[in-house]
Length: 318
Image 1 (cartoon, rainbow, N blue to C red):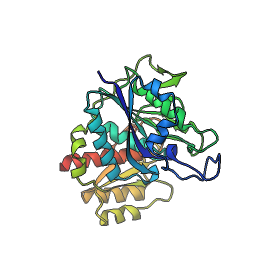
Image 2: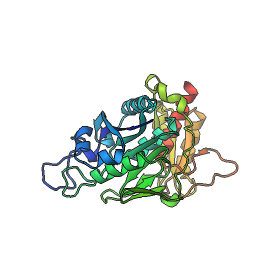
Image 3: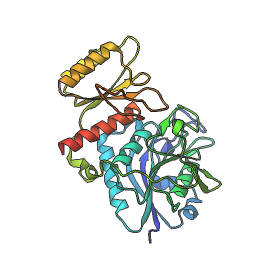
């Protein structure tokens, strides 16, 4: 019987400290170990309903997340998920790129049978009222729930899915939202309440075959360009000249692009560069035209579309 929850630490604000007592900003991220985070929340032992295992995978401000750290995190997730005594994983992560890491893991981890719960904090551990301890307790509560499956994000008492979750505010505690798709559930008084009365079943990871090989495969260079008033093709042309493998265009509205940028993307596609289009709009999904010139990644933000394109290119070259 699976009895262990493994907590993988990667740094972030949840492990941050400040020399100024009670400060919410101006702190240094990734200072406390994951063992210190666990020790600061005594109720975790009861919430885990078994043993808690801590492992420090990385210690970074998540704005500095790298492909190499992603490889290491995926490898450690795979190793722990394969253990029969492990019921689920909790990952402490910085807020800045949490949505990207969540989407990567959702695409590569064969975790449909066990939960992988990412959590974070908007205030450092030394704040007057830090939010990290409650978020960590809530994440463990979700990880041990018998219906929890796949990659989930827990923050400010809300459970988000990896496709929808996005950081929408730079400062407030409830900094994450799931757009018009809505959250998957909530943690209230130590209990999980699913939005649809039961936990959703996660889709199968489309690139699970890549997971054990990420360390041996080169990560293709994929860049993001933004369509906006006055846009031109200078950046796209420079990226093509620099050998980029793919470009994601952050489009206006329903996938519309400035004519100058559109022309440059057509040149890039003609030169063999993979072009994908995602919308700048934070809610809803694009409706691709019947005769589309590009592949439209409907419902994905540009940063998540970049991850999907990288994995697609890696799979093609594998």
